[in-house]
Picture (tube, rainbow, N blue to C red):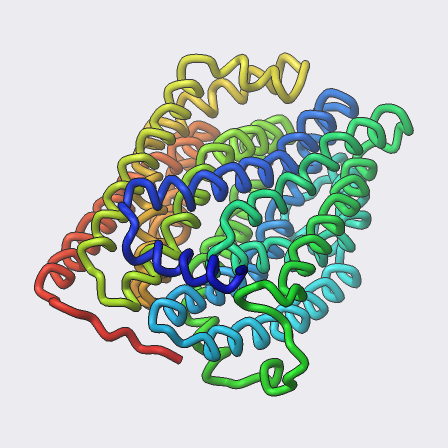
Length: 461
């Protein structure tokens, strides 16, 4: 019975109406991403209200480290899930199984290496990322206790993507609910009742992510699952062709997060130079607020990815294009709504995280400037996911780097010298505008190639 349902799910990707299909896959993904965002939002709200503005600034220093962790996880998670969708679309079940096994081993090796480096050089890393004498103790405490949770976080999020790509969007959403629900309950208990402060937020996340990881991995041990872990050792033997196929696709979203890590370093150091710890704290609130919108867009993209990947593998280009444009429209509405709220009610956004008048004032100024061009971000993220979903690694990587690196870094170096702290905030919308121009050119070219093609035979690992 389960096997019949699996086949029906795959056929649905190729035959069901695109609007209904995108809703079915995106809604659980969006809910899952919003739930995932709650990990960060809940921690920052409770820490800001229960510990103070210095703790918020200290937590902001940890953002680059967390982004780097996410980047390394995405290298396997995003690449593997896209490859699985394409292979299932091409009816290559054994190839998808091989990707699953190689991804498990590869992720374990990557996580062990980077967590060991973090544990050994934790203070050096935080200082390099902009920690001051005031914020370092808070950042150190959070990172020291969050390390075990980062191990489980990578496994939970990576295999959650695989679950969705193999036809289980609702189950993937439930995985996120389980972890976030635990975090909502445990974080205030540890922070306020036990008075553990910032380390209490980290411990709550550790426990929550461990439960999520156990749940999602149990899915792949079930005999009823379409893709599952089996005793065949060849499935787990690293194959450089499979590894390359995973990394080539996963490199784009991975580089976005890695770039965000180093961008945060530049931002934190520039903010501290022009505005001190208050400015760093304001950037942390801005980042948290905008992540709520971008996480919704990422959820839409996660729902879009298996549809586009499967139909690309099956040669159904008209369905691919319909899915892309529908996802673009919905994503644009989401980010524009978030932009309007941030511009009209910036003080309320600041008050959600802190009671400090200075931090609320700087957050309001930050939002007024930085959100000016935020409406185009949805189109940029969906476009990058399109190239990722069809295996166009080079295009996806380049497009990912335009906003985060190619334009933003020079702007962060130029604008503050002329406009001071406001120059840092101005760099974000200016970069968005330039990146959108590049994105439009690349999408127009790719869509024209689709229009000329009657049937596409993707390269399969």
